[in-house]
Every structure is written in structure tokens, then in C-alpha cells.
Length: 354
Ligand SMILES: *Cc1c(COP(=O)(O)O)cnc(C)c1O
Image (cartoon, rainbow, N blue to C red; front, side):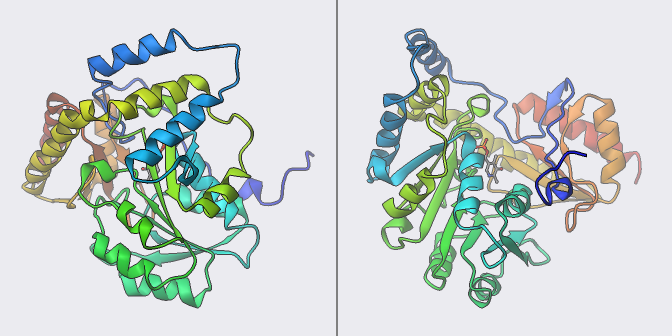
């Protein structure tokens, strides 16, 4: 018998097995790829990479560029292999044992539970209300009564798609004293970002990613903005040279050229609004309001519907019997023809059964 770490066998795993989908709208990636101008610049820079060297200047340059763009310095930025790595590290930084409590709502990003367990901290889950909105006062109370070390909100929220206003984030931040992480993986698809609140609160952290709006899921790059003390503590948890030069160089180019992505982002938001209207009018289907690049729908026969979609080569995200997400499907926005094809498949299925 191998002597594994305590509790590891009970840790849930995140399933990333995939099949070769005809239409893949299950992971909230961009289906559009890099804009041609950006791709050209990326390839030209990659052809000049010093393959024999560890990444070094590239890391600082990207931190500097990101910090500057928000009116901060490079000492206020930390990068990760996807914002996932940063979020995992922040759970580790504020975790350690059961006296460290981490508060987050549910349903929200399923990885929070896994990171909390891995960090050794005790998690405290605040249930969202019937319509998936957050009761801000209940959240504040859970944080304060448990004397939490970390509070986490995903805004806009995955997988429910809804968003908290900056006023609400401000309200919460002003009433809790522990570290407060806002996961803004989908912020480019809405007009609410808590970045401006960093000036007001030194316990606030904002995590962002290149994987969604910036079509760069392949490179695994994310960043976090925060006050220097938090960044310095988080930096201690990383191995040296943790992001490779190819990803850093690519993300650097993408960040420099982020204006090139505006038309794509506009298109995805337009598609989301268009498809939301269509799903809303399907009998038996509830489409939740979304401020992201995906739509969550509820349908009483969602599991069987998902089987039919799989049969047709369409990959959406089914939550099966996850608590509070029973009979829901999350559909990422792709190109207009892809969105129409997914809708048609769902409509045909649903209408044949009413
Ligand atoms: C996609 C996603 C992330 C980060 O993804 P990375 O690819 O690791 O940057 C973080 N939080 C949420 C809620 C997400 O949906």
C-alpha cells in the first residue's frame, strides 16, 4: 500500500476528458481564435524567443505592462498558469488548517471547493438565493461570524451568469476585514469591475484571465492585482520561473493589442443577448440572465437532452445532479452559426416533447 497524503483519496477531481465535438461550447473558451493581426505579431515574436533561457525579463515586462494599464506598478501584479493557479495559491496563502476559514457562495466555480480542501482550510459555503442572487448581508455575516481568513466572490458568477454591482462589492468590502478575492474571469463581458476599488481597500484582490475574452486558453495565463504585501506573500508560494516564455510572450502581445479583441467581445455579448431571447421563448426552458460569454438554462429533462446533444456531436456543460444546478445546462457562446445550430438541436428536442 502506498502511503498517500491524508485526505487525497477523498478529493474530488475536475474532469477535463473531451471528445472530438462538432460544436464545442462546454468550457467557456472563445471559439474565435486570435485576431489575424495579433496572431501575426505573436508568431513573429515567438520566432525570436531565446529557447535556451529560463523566462526572466518576460515575467517582469508583462507585470509592468498590466500594472501600468490599471494605474499601478509591477509590484501590484502576480501572474499564474491561468488565473486558476493564482486562485489556488491564494487559498493556500490564507489556508493551512481548520482555524483558517474560506467563505464563498454556491453554486459558483466548482474549483473553489477543491482548492479549499487542498489548502487544508475549512470552507464555509453561503447558499445563493432562489434566483441565484447573493444576499450580501448573509455573506458578510458568514465572513465575520466565522472570523474567516479569505472571502471569495466570482463576479460575474460562473455558472449562473449573474453579476453583482460595484456598489455591492464596495458594500461588502467595507464590512469585512479579511482578504477578499474577486474572480473576474468574465469581466470583459460586462461593465462591472472592482479594479477601481483597489485604491480604497488594501485587503482586496482582483483575479483576471487571458483564457476567456482573449482567446488564449491554450497558454494558461492569468493575473491578479492587489496591494504589494499580498503580492509579496503570494509570490513566496511559487516555484521559480513558473510560467514559460512562450506563454508570457504570447500574453504580452495579446495584452498590448487588447483593442483588437473589442469586436470579438462585442460580437459575443451580442450573441449572448440574441440567444438569451431565443431560449427564453422556448416552452419548458428557463434562461437565466447572463453577463458573461455563456447562458445557463434549466429544462426538466436536461440530462436526456444533453445525451441527445452528445449524440449530435454538440458539447455543452451539463451539471447533472450538482446541488442547486439539477437539470441545468451551461452553453458557451460560439460563432453565430454555432449558436444557431445548438439552439436548433435544443428546440427540436424540446418541442418534440411538449
Ligand atoms: C475560466 C475560469 C477561471 C480561470 O481560468 P484559467 O484558464 O485558469 O485562467 C477562473 N475562474 C472562473 C470562474 C472561470 O470560469
